[in-house]
Image (cartoon, rainbow, N blue to C red; front, side, top):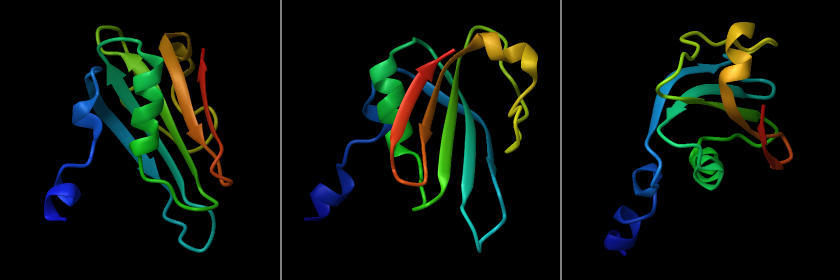
Length: 111
């Protein structure tokens, strides 16, 4: 049983290399929890991006967004929980956005 607990698949098992650059979470604990991440990748593997997003923390009725960028191109260093979530100049460089909404529905869209 301990082996199964310690040998669960995780981000390190994916072929794509991910690096979390920034993370924001609202401090409101009496309403929906909002989480947003900026993550760089070494390849644009959408299946791995979805799996990575699935590994991210999510709270029932909350919202989790992960913005993926190429590690070899410019990407935002700051992030906001309000739209626009990062400087507009980076929008065209965003490879994909993973979102899990309050009902647990997952979407991954490319820009």
